[in-house]
Image (cartoon, rainbow, N blue to C red; front, side, top):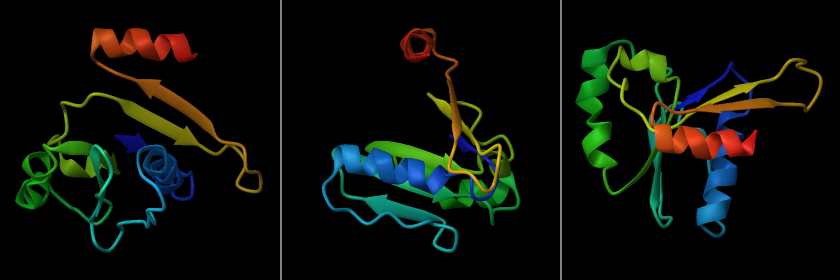
Amino acid sequence: MLRGDLGAGKTEFVRGLASALCTDVPVRSPSFAIVNEYPCEPRIYHADLYRVSSRDEFEELDLLDESSDGVLVVEWPERAGGGLDEYDIEVWISRPDPYDDLRIIGLDSPDPGLSGIISTLE
């Protein structure tokens, strides 16, 4: 799950993830498509739920089943109406000054094993 204001760098984060797992895959914001799929190994499903207005609408997308063979990265997860309460890693991106390129990134996980790995990154 990716959290951050507009322009914080959520799609740029996905670009970095894709560049680590793929070669030369153009990553675009899925704002209008809602989901973009990238043929990486593992496959990346990049969803932007900004235009989703309810849990029912989120469930109609069937993202959890459709992305079961890869990594699902979700921008604006709160728009799923609780449909994404189970997740592996949450990433927060903030941009304290809109005129500066500085970003602050935070990671968290409800999984104790992943939390241990994340704490080594701090």
